[in-house]
Image (cartoon, rainbow, N blue to C red; front, side):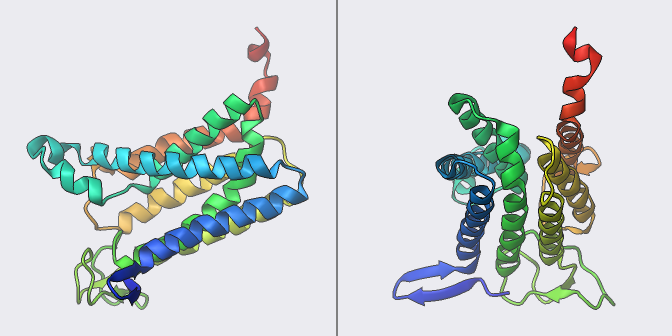
Length: 256
């Protein structure tokens, strides 16, 4: 854990923020590199990335407010503090993808083709971003003993200190890097529209659903499921639909 990267006078550069910026940059560079090789319009890739970042920030904050709705209803003034901090990764993904979809609709370009292109970049960026979570101590795991990979935070403002915990941030990071690698291998061969994006949604939703069982940071709930697990169900269904979009389009019912 290393929350502060460095200080210059009164300016403090936090590791979390630096890694989030690195994640965005690396994801964009990967998409541009692969897009150029495949004949994509690089201006569209950059625009989608920019609008995706804006949509992601809005979505991450909105979903955080939704997840914290019970707290806000009990104490409306708490929203002022929540504006300063608190994001939900799923909100960022949903908001970013929605912003990209709207852009593609306005520009009249194939959304699924660009979603397929950027899906490995999203997974790769998430892998870097979760290392940022580890540096800050947020998104921490449950207390665990006799686990060789347990981590113990010493100066975290978020995780309980001096207690061995599941390294859920690093587990998530490793999983996201694996998904990115799998998608890059899968996309190395020509695929029909929606295959890569659909596979990303399927793999990520399954992995996220599982990792939630090991987390112990404050999160919203929907019944017995965490908010993220509840969303996972719909992302998984959406991923299956998008993966099979070519078959759905060709089905007899679609021509009625």
